Image 1 (cartoon, rainbow, N blue to C red):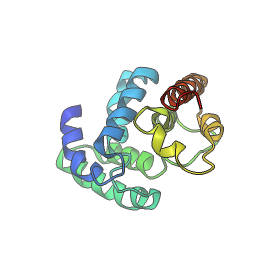
Image 2: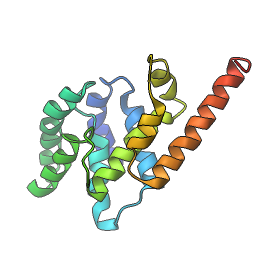
Image 3: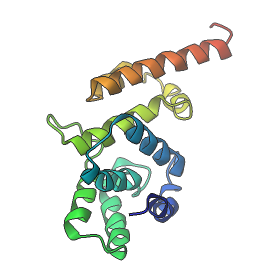
Length: 167
């Protein structure tokens, strides 16, 4: 499946979200660069990442509407039912934190958490009163992901001090 085509088909739905399609592209890039999966699973995880927020802004909307939208798009592309089912399972659970998640789930989940530390999204979360960055770091499954989160958090805080004159 063509990644650009999937992004183009998902974009009208993703643009309704707070961070739009740019968020999804950041999550996609983080996953691709940091959490490689077996070649035979790449199409599945890339599709799930592109569609993970397709249902709307809230978790409820993403879980309720996301699988329906993804199914309609993937059926038009002629994807097998089992493939569509796996994509929809990831969409409808991607905010949960299961004890023993699959490799695909971990890749999506960790990437979706790491994007919060990006220069583009950090200010939004950091402005929320009482936001607990350490909690987010600890939710990340992989040691590599936690390390990347800590490094990004240190960088964002350093940038913040520079902008605010060391305050």
